[in-house]
View 1 (cartoon, rainbow, N blue to C red):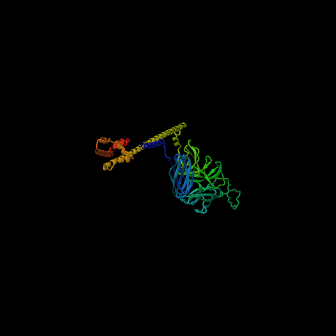
View 2: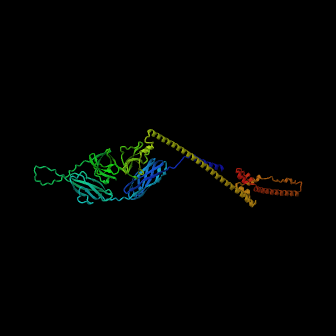
View 3: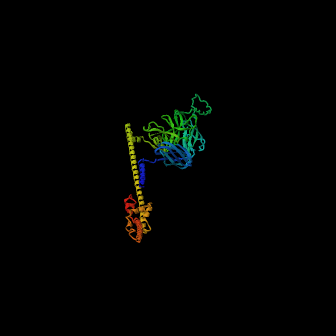
Length: 619
């Protein structure tokens, strides 16, 4: 029994040790899914939310949902997504790196604030694991009510007088000026304080005859109205002639005013952009121009064209259309290089930025490479550092809202701009005067540092593994000691129960006496041995008196018949007495067993494997 217990215990110990010693450092994979972007937009604006997922192991698959308020926002498009229900976009995407970014476009429907939360984000690596999530919010501001008043409060010319008298609701006037007048000054005041006069054309270089002067007024909401003044410049007086004698002056004849010669219609101006033909359009409304631009005239290869000029900074936009199309788009025009590039503006958190093509004298650091990204369905060219292809940080050449042109660092996730300093970058790389060898030396030092760090990380991992094994071994030893302690306690408990049971037998015998309690019988019953009493009694048997009747027998012939009969009777009585004596001896033997010491009993039972301390207690 004891041997089987020990085998069982040591089998458990061996199993635990085998698990502990072969145990490797195991950790649960972790990662996060964070949403960014949003901010404050207006009703009708588009807003882009970026979700970046990263983990501490290679991701092979990504799942999550983007939850939003469908009453405030309307889902438009996104990466690897489909609209599962109103207010929920489900995403399922494959991956093969530790991080990946997703972009989702929404349209603002009505004023309010919508939380953007990431729900049920799951990363699929060596196993599936839950990602922590953080969201963002979008505030949609109520649309600003702009004034539609694009009328004038007053309109005067100098020289000349308007006919009829000025009225804000009347946009057509006439005036006549002398032949000597070649230029007219127009004074126009908008009726609404937020409206403005954006242009006055035709007031210079008046030709003889009729001239149309146009005054363009733009309301706060962008709508425009045009006031037209038709100014007639009179013909010059005829030169006087000398006559030999005076003659009667003939009646002057009325010279008809010649109608202005119509200008010949010129073909549209064609330009090339990426080998595609575009045409310069002059008939664009001022309301279609970007904010902070005004309409002016520019001499383009000997012909006057309408352009948009920035109020802040040096920037010219030309309206280009495709062939046989009336509507088009504005393009940035570089007068020095006579080239056109697409007009793109980004509304960042610091204001509006207009993305520009590189100009002469602007250089990108050699260690940056060209990289493009898509924003609001427009491809934007930028630059970034090698090795950071998965990061949403770029360098852009742009003009800020104050008209300053410079390189800016741009964070696509936060839609933020910050001025980029080449000198600061050169200082970080070792100074603007650092040679190529010095830069290579810095790179070698960085590589060595990285290798040293890798070695330290390996040592740290090995040390942690060793410590973990020690902890496991200590835990196993503690478990063994605990098992042995429990086993000893249980063994002691069972032995004490046996002792108490035997002592109970003795106590009962002492209390009730030998006539009512037979210890030998009780022990025989306890050990299931019916011959125990007899065997024990046999060990205590003493030599008994054997009656030799021959000593008292007498020969029949030596005694009388009566004496013989009496002798026989005496022998019979002696034998009967001897039988009684033997029975008494058997009773005494039973009493000897009852009165035997526990030491005699255990000696008889051959109990010699008990612990010494337990044996002493029993004795």
